Image (tube, rainbow, N blue to C red; front, side, top):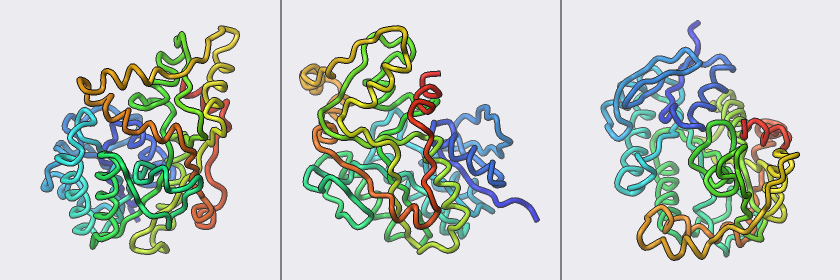
Length: 304
C-alpha cells in the first residue's frame, strides 16, 4: 500500500518545511507547490505553480489526503487581495481531492477584551486589519465543504524562522545580537515551530476521527512576564553579555505612516500589553501531551 500523500503549500517557509518533515517522519509522502521548486532534505514531488492560481493548486492536490496551507502572500502584504484567494484555491483543491486542509491559526483574531486565557470557543473579536482578514479566513474554513483543521499558536520561533517577532525584534542578529528587546510588560505565547509541526502530524494521524471542522489551541512556551524569553536568549548567549532593553515602539509609531509593515506591527502592539494564553486542554485530550522542547534547547537550535 503506497504511503498517504500530503501537499504542502509554503514548503519553502519555516512552518511549511517543519510540517513536511514531521509528516514525512510519520510515513507520509510529500508533494509541494512552489513558483520556483527548490531544494529540500526530504524526497518531494515538486509541482511548479502559484498558490494564488486555483488550477495549479488543484493539479498539485490530486491524490492527496492532506493539504497544509502554509503559504503567505508574497512579501507578507496584500493579505485581503492575495491571502483570501489563496485560501479559497486550497479549500477547493481539498474538496476536489477529498482531503483535509490543515491551517496554522494565530492569535490575531482576538482582542484585549478576549480575556487572559482563550480556548476554542472564545469569540473572534479582532480590532486590527490583519486580524479581521484572519477572522474572515477562519470563517471560510468553518463554512467550507472540505474538511478542515485549525491549530492555533502564538508567535513563531525556531530554526529557519526569519519573519517573526523573535528574529526581527527580540533577538535581531541571532547569535550576533548586540541588544535584546522586551516587547511589552504582559505575558506572551510563543510557539517553537518543530513542536507545532509535531502536533500537526499527530492530529493528521487521527484526522479521520475528528469533526469535519476542527480547531485546537497549541499552548507552546508561555512567557509569564514578557521578559522571560529575552532572559532565556541572554543566558544562551553567555558568557557574552548582551543587554536587554525595551523595544522602541515610539520609533515604529513615527515611521508607521511611511512603512506599511511597521504600521501593521504598531497595530499588533496590544498583544504585548495584554496577556493572551492559549488553553490547550482540547489538544491534549486528542493527542496526549503537547510536543514540548525545553526552552533552552529550543533557543539554542533557533540561534544556531
